[in-house]
Image 1: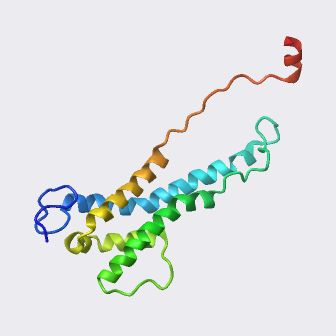
Image 2 (image 1 turned 180 degrees about the horizontal axis):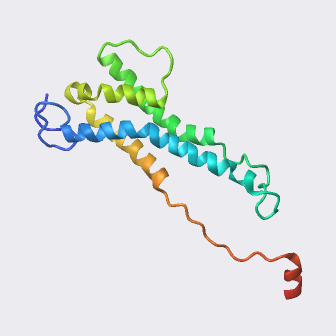
Image 3 (image 1 turned 180 degrees about the vertical axis):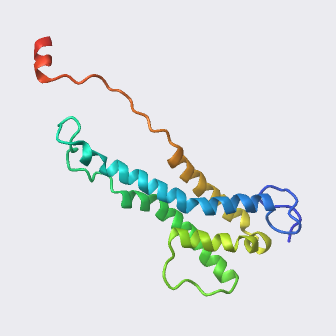
Length: 169
């Protein structure tokens, strides 16, 4: 054991990670499923919005239909990677604690919940908590970046009908 936190070098009372770093990791683990749901909602809205714009060609369906962005595929690329990383940590920690492995793969919510429940043990007994912290921070930061990204509309110009274009020419 160490007396200083392996993450921030603060006093850790003999644990590998201090209470401040533990609280930060707990917040990230709690927020990740919510972030994934928010991203899924955003992608679903983006995918389905053009369908509801009516028959006006300027606002109608996009070429190739409205399913240009598959929310499930896009979310899997984001949260599927998160789940794979966190599930591998869960598996390693189950092995360390001599606990049975999952029979079926867990969802993002299930895995983050398991990790949050066992976080105190991780901070107290798991020497690689700094690596866990770094990967979890990277995932949480990536999620925040996706959600916090500003949605901007950049005007490209004014649309003119073909008759107006011919009149100008």
